[in-house]
Length: 370
Image (cartoon, rainbow, N blue to C red; front, side, top):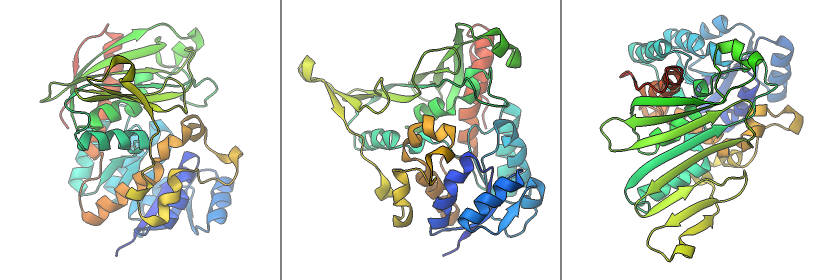
């Protein structure tokens, strides 16, 4: 059984994945890359990883590297992905795929031209809540799907670098991914409205005034549409990544408060009996035994080392080992991972173009074919 030599780039959030690759039967946790040499050596020593790079360019020139898993800041995703693909490496990259539609197109083309796999590591479509709803759908319990809705609300005051003032929809894959991913739908066009206004010192970073952006997505060759909404600043809301599905037999709604149970509505019952709270099962049994434990806990030894996105995101629904497993299994079977490059480009472009729509008062904008 071939093992793939994995190199992880970026060791903030990226360090969450090191122990998973160390344990996965298809992976050899081969190399790590981080500009800060002190941090690089600290993590390398902690996990016994000998091959270390402070220079991304040198890493992708290493002929032993099969897979590059990118966890860099958002503005580096497209550049590093393209360089790694063109160097003949398979690429997994944290969200979003890129920051422009043109970059999304370039990544799809490079993946195809080089014959290398690309996967955007979208956590929500491997979170236990999504997997539970997907199981209900595949068993026929939801009936005909009639509508999908998702949100991602977060208070990002105090986040560093490029985050202040970021247009809400520029980081929309956590809510676009599940509404498109459940039925493997392709977004055809989008219309989005901005609402409210953030502080002047935040607006100046991206010339984006909106406190909230809410978008409607129409899916290609489907009677379905979805609504997604996002906020990042100056909106009072506990962190929430919600995903809701309305079917003819059953519907599933996200709790209003983090940590509470999903609500399942069942049609044709007496009105008081329609809703019921349902605990979400874990789906560790989908995984190789060696990495099943990682669905229910973070991998850091100490709380103070846990990355803020992991803490605020409630551990991302146990998704990390599922993401790793999907990518490695796809490589082993020589199939496309989910989401592959075209799907990742579609989801990412929905957010980019939704913001453009909001700036134009809700204008309908077509999503390019990838």
